Image (cartoon, rainbow, N blue to C red; front, top):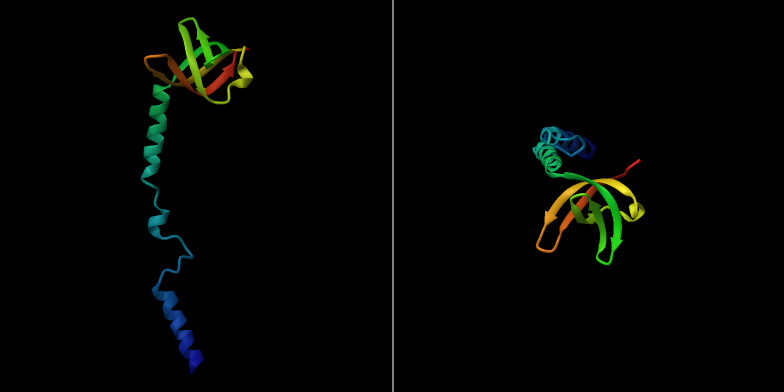
Length: 110
């Protein structure tokens, strides 16, 4: 009798509850955050700027010398392109002291 009772309780429990073995319908729905991430990345691409010039080391760090002036470089590991002509893409921040490019991509000119 105990075996029958335990079997019936287990069957009832399995039939009446979600034990977490399969994803719920809510978990299978696409996240509402995904379109927001895609939109943010698209907007980021719109505000990035591209520059070309020579990367040099100064007492204050790395700079990009362009025909339009000098820009401080921050971001990627740029040590390997010091002394080379490059194309850089990044976000630009201007303050009272200087203009900084936060580099997201750097390519050496051929």
